Length: 566
Image (cartoon, rainbow, N blue to C red; front, side, top):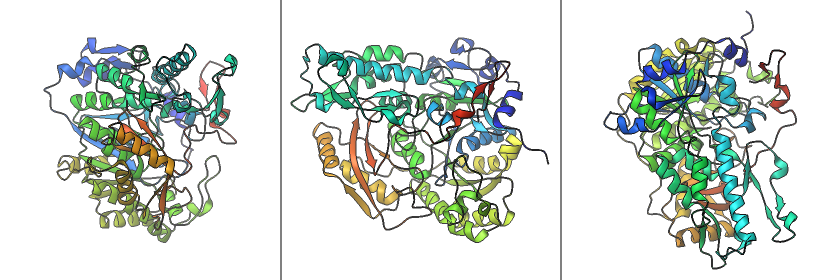
């Protein structure tokens, strides 16, 4: 059997359809489409006014078991399922986040899907695309510049320089910028600061959660950058920079339209990480797609304890969106690892132990799958398990996954071959998911009560979602939470920042951990985005590069083509 082409080779061999044709088939008017060349476009928000009375389609959210460092194929399954739904006659669209350059050139590589379930143009989606991430970084850093300029020119707002929590951002993994000294060139007001990756910026969260341009402008104005000496918040509105930040975001708020490898619509918009941010594509992209499609397949980052929990408790709570079904992606190799067999290390060959037939190891690892199914059911969302198939998987192992999934409350569990067969390889999965989605989620509910304290809602997520015995909040975090409540922000939802490699806060705890307590070291208020972030354990907001970054293999070929991107 010949080797399967690489993701890049498959993408470069494709012949994308004109984006105007994709838009027309969706029902968009020519004046609602702003083309960026032949195969990508931005969509004007006026379409939401025109279609205000049009019923929404069904929203299907794709999440996963606890992933390995290689990921388990959520984006690929999102795209493959959208292709599969179209293959069975459902008007479907995919909605995914825009990849950050950090993972693209770091460990993970590209984020546009894989195999025969990709979004095109693959290179553009992974590299700059329509410039939205650069707009986020520019707006964020403009706010930082105005803040420091205010301090330099007399500080009429009486800002306490030691209270400043507004960092700079950069869309590159650069651990050397985690702690920096700024102001040294002025020989005064020198202070310690930091850089975050752009995906962790509050401006990114604002982009992802805004409902229109006016809402974006208002949210940017509510961002708290510092406090006065009297402990009162200082906002971007008070710094008189929110309007300029909104101007920089004026085009970025328009969702991007691309296409799947099979010529179906795919919306690619916003890119918050799920481990340090809320991990979902934009509310606006989902709303536009729901008006134009029968089914919208959207991805929530990492496992159900991460992006899915935030999809419900942040994105749905703040937007009014409601899912009709959840798809949990599982792979045999990851479940074996959770069952105590083999290791998966990015950049290294697959451990031979993971290739050997071992249904007992899969069964042990399925405790992790059962927990994630339980999380979705806690929110009243019906579940279908997608068994993302890889060469070398054994039927006996898939049978174990299906058995455990059904026993744990999933409506169905289906082997999907969308990586090698595209939409036809996901047709059976699509039939199962569409059957469930048409019934909706009549028992849908949120987890934490809005009336409880911030600390109580953090504990609810830790105990009811992660399965922890409780939380251990540092004195610093406790003081911060009490301050947020004093300022009137006690009703905001919680965004937990923790490792994606375990249901717990500790990456080494695989499977279904128990008997652990989640340490909360710090809490930060994101008043513009509309949530409070609790940082669990040793979470970093500026990732680092591995010893052999994926970017080492990326280059320009002799004819100007991109090589080495994956």
